[in-house]
Length: 169
Image (cartoon, rainbow, N blue to C red; front, side, top):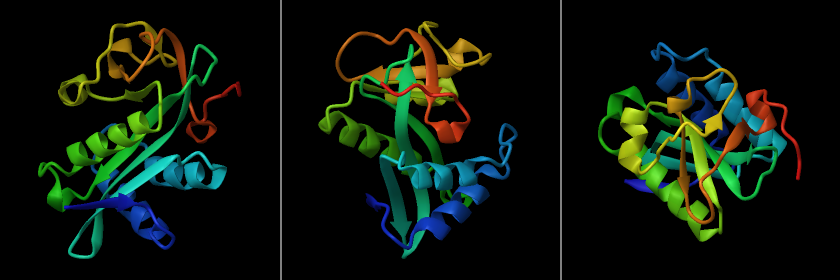
């Protein structure tokens, strides 16, 4: 499996992959592919990794800045993560998450947050203690991993492309 940073010319393949990966998901509103484009256009696509298989992009993950309690403080949001339906359940998503987290930690990030299924992300060391909020979302779905510093507490906001009002610190 070849994991590499996104490069110029990957944009359309990433868009299509994300669209195809989320299309059958009951929770998707179709915003995931345009979201990645907006993150890129806003300069908030801090880490963008792809997986290639036989010369085709079959996996992608995005990381962007996040704030907790109104401050960035080195926090980053994970998502979306996309794997082509033909190659799901082969460890591609897990490999992307692990590589992205490793890069964030090496760059001195405080931690990473996401909204997602705790049954999936707890296997990747994410946890939730109910002390983070994100709008009206059930707090069990708001998860984090800390690289350094205290456990996060307060209201989570992702980058502006997510539609959150996001204070700069």
